[in-house]
Amino acid sequence: MPRMTTMRTVDGRYRLEREIGRGGSGPVWLGWDEVLGREVALKRLGAAPGASDVEARRAEREARMTARVQHARVVTVFDLVETDEDHWLVMEHVVGGTLSQRIRERGALTPDEAAPLLADVAEALAAAHEAGVVHRDIKPSNILIDADGAAKLSDFGIAKGVTDASLTRTGLVTGSPAYLSPEVAAGGSAVAASDVWAFGATLFHVLAGVPPYEVTDSLMGALYKIVNEEPPRLEAAGWLAPLLRSTMSHDAQARPTMAQVAEFLRAGAAHAAAPAAPATTPDSPARSAVPHPADLPTMATPPPPKHTPHSAGQHRRRRRPTVVARWRPRRRSQPAAS
Image (cartoon, rainbow, N blue to C red; front, side):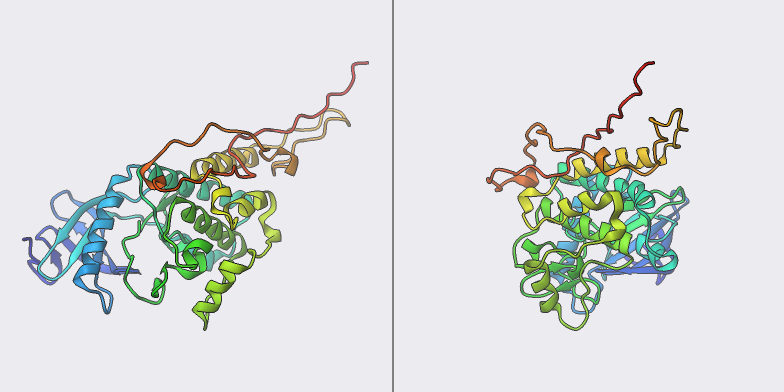
């Protein structure tokens, strides 16, 4: 078994530089890979107070699931090291901080700012679901911003079962309470559709600057609201309002897939980023850089979803969501020829 060869080196290879954060399972360190000569991030698994060997093994299993998701928008796992004292997950170091930090420092994002970042996350989640992996803990603090300003998704359920201030586990639920789906808040198991709700709650947080449900003194009171009350309306959602409503539908079968969400956001972001065309006649006004509500996707009947491991056991017919992925620009009337 590999050993912690010094107080500051893991497995004789990864030199610990400094602590750079804390996840549900314990501290995250900036490290240096002595073999390949590169910066890495090392997460100490099962190190939170009260963690058991069973919880550490669960974290190890979740780490292996993370490594199954091969996608550019997912934080890459390089190594999993077990020492006599600890388990360490070795990952790529993403330098830009978390989306949560960005919101705290700069405030809420506009729909046009949020769309490309959340499209990155949606694509990562779609890849995870295709691989049969359910994240279980989507929230702004688990979304990292890289040097190019793009988003990367981290923490694929690694902290499940570990109790701390940000990841609460009761006898009924595991996850970050403010982002739990109604079915999980009611004590059910997390499935892919639960990630979709958590994504919607994250989108709400990004646009509002606060999560849709505040968890302060009463965890059970917050869970009651999630299960029994409709999500709050958000005027700041703008052209993303239909997506917010569909992802946070109480009917899990009515939520879109993450692949549909990703395509919607990519198309909307491209539309918003395109320069407005100058008006040529009074009857053909300039196109706004912000999508008009009539430009949003309309109801369509896409092909049935493919069967993937995460959908096993879900036999009810899926009701199609009100927001689907195909972007359909509004046709504008042309002036009659003179």
